[in-house]
Length: 238
Image (cartoon, rainbow, N blue to C red; front, side, top):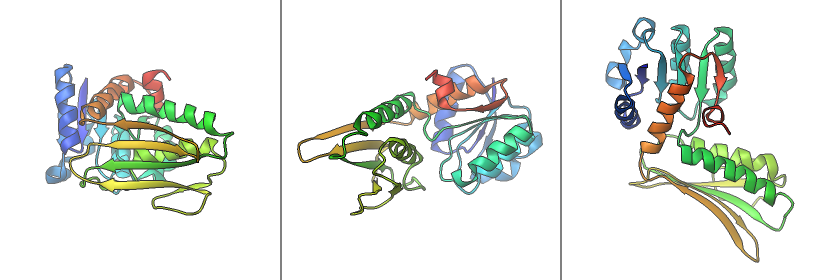
């Protein structure tokens, strides 16, 4: 499989290492230093583009890949206000697109656990629920995309919570997401249910970027040759 890496920072390098070990070819590497080389002509020879940049560039990067007829796996966060626009654009161009706030197989299992636990806890109003996430200081978005996904899963089932907020709150209808940025910290996410009697919590801690990178390559392998909109649920068969 021929892969274009749109975003060649630490994550891009980690993805490249795993992709090459699996026998794939990286035909384009786009970083800040050579952004002008990211053209339709340059990317069109790839089977799949893996996009890991930032919230201000992700949507336009995705569109350019779709215009080139290239399937796109996107792991950028902080741009989801334009998600519906991108889905509509991809469908109008008969493209292929897969977005995940986190590509780690372990985190996607954690998402399923979080949803199941929220369903179990829904009848018990004596428990309050909160989220905590810890990442390295170079992470640009807060809260993390993973934390937002977890929060939205909780909000679907815990009806006492109406919205999430990224600060400590005394409002019972607000779901707290407490964000910390410390080094070194690849990523920790915790969901905690608290009552006067006991606490229940689930935690996922990443030890390095390999889980994210290997999941992104797995997603690219899945998307290669397909059309349509997909998620990691499709990749992992959940």
